[in-house]
Amino acid sequence: MTQSLPNHGPDDATDRDRRSRLAHDFERHRPYLRGVAYRMLGSMAEAEDALQECWLRLDRRPPEDRTGLRPWLTTVLGRICLDQLRRRHARREEPTGSWLPEPVVLDYGSPEADTIRADSLGLALLVVLETLSPPERLAFVLHDVFAVPFDQICVIVGRSPAAARQLASRARRRVLAARLDPDADIAVQRQVVDAFLAASRDGDLRALLVLLDPDVVLRLDTGDRPGVAQPPLSGATAVAEYLRSGARFFAPLCRPAIVNGGAGIVVGRPGRTVGVVGVTIVGGRIREVDIVADPRKLGRGHSGSRT
Image (tube, rainbow, N blue to C red; front, side, top):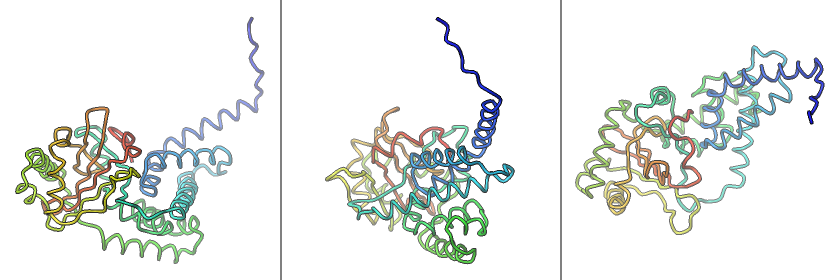
């Protein structure tokens, strides 16, 4: 029995064409929008959810002037992220250990690697952004990272342009006060990480102490697993001892990678990642070690994902 097809009129065809054009325009802006959302939320999963909500709002009520679509999308996405950050801050509890963002990992030599490195924020800087208020974070990310003008930012945060400028200024001061100036040369970073892995595999405490900055900080994010979380470790001796204690089990599973635009490490067999390590290198020595071992933050944002 042949099923008859519905008789679509000209209005249906027009609506399909409209949605097709909107979808095409949205996809053109998707990499930029994903970059904004990830830097705002520190999570690829939450960033994708924010993009989906942004698309639904565009589909329901698109702007009349599509030539200004990028500012319109930035405003809508900014409000979505701002609401998400406010909800997160409202329900936040004192963490039992360290909190780290969801990492973005690429293999060395992948086609996206150079593009990602040119426009990335390291894990350590994303940790600093998490300490800002939601409006401060939005103003800083949009203006200082993506050059969005204050007369557009003020509409998103519901304040005057002068107040939006003050938000970004306060955020910038806090970021600069906490931000390190990491070595920019990826080859230098890779050499340090390779030496770090070799020392860890050998359990060579002396070599680890040479590689670690005296004021090195190690953060470990294990999620909410009871009995595993711990506060940050500080100082070369404490960090080296901690790394050496777990090196025999984990070091053979480690391989170099690019983590949030810098040299880092992936822990685990191919297809089964158990940890991602971001390394901040200043003056040829390791200043910060950020270990993401929360299973909910692993498996996404790896090997080819863009920010």
